[in-house]
Image (cartoon, rainbow, N blue to C red; front, side, top):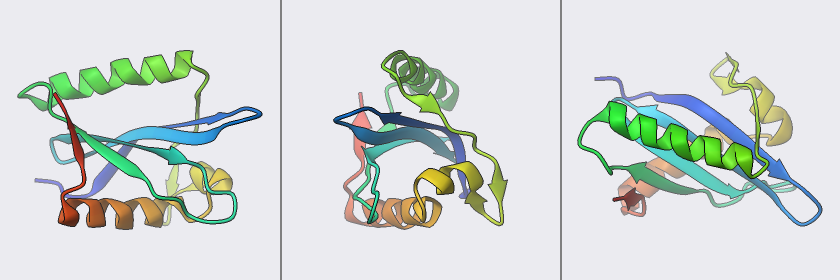
Length: 119
């Protein structure tokens, strides 16, 4: 079973009062999403949720794709997920250090049990 993070979507919303990110990824057959404010000067605390509404991975992936459409309708724009040297190239341009930050944050969240579940 794969244990590497496979990024599936990264969205960015920015207007006069808000600057935030939202996206999702898979680890093996588990589906997770992340969100938080974009850190202009520092890395911010990311939050995570595991999609567990359905008993199979395909249905949970379908559910997170539905939420992705909702985010797009709210104004989040898609950021390309091209990977080079194990980092998300376009994401790093708008959020320097994001790729490593997410991986470390996810590891800590898993260890501390702070990943929320979606029912």
